[in-house]
Length: 248
Ligand code: 13P
Image (cartoon, rainbow, N blue to C red; front, side, top):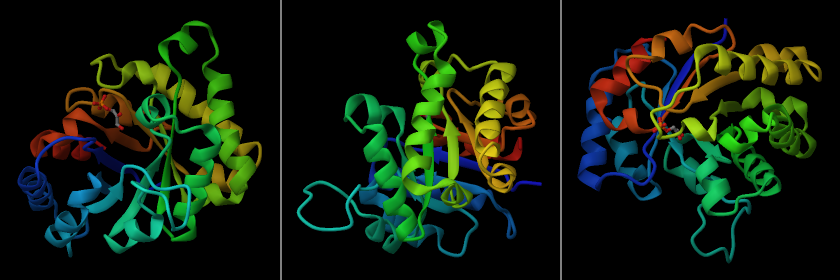
């Protein structure tokens, strides 16, 4: 059985005090021994949230990570910096990074490798746009995004990573993929990995993201190849996020 994982992505929302209150409220809703729950916090609040959630089951993640180790890269945050601020995880290749900030397949693969160098677990986000789905290219988009990382990092590196399938058309739109649509792509991703390594395919957590809410989480998480979720909007409310976590 794979360990499930429910991860919040706060994106660029909330003030410092709101972030702290949210992290405290989530942590307060967890019991000792709970596992598989994390939040990806804006960089500037990571240290505060790290302090507030120390000794709780709530893990932390960054929302991106630099494709370089250190040096003159103004505005970037390295994997070592994330590690120092208590991050277990770092998102790489979120569709908002790919579409608004030009993160390419290659730079996403480099970010993936940089995270792993510091033992920060990369959460590789992949998914098709509406146009790509409608032109029947979903699987080739998935192949391209996945293979860019496999080609650079090697298949075994995926054993220490997480994949998040986030169809772009379902992000923040209230339009969720149906359980079957999501399962179909998750199964495809796992099969592509299995063709290279069955061990890695059996181990890797594949999360679904895109308008997961308390009322649809249970059905999505019940699908055999869906190991949890990457939650945007609904992770900004502690009660909703905890309900989603408890739906697994
Ligand atoms: P929503 O849950 O708001 O659709 O966002 C999903 C997402 O992009 C998580 O990374």
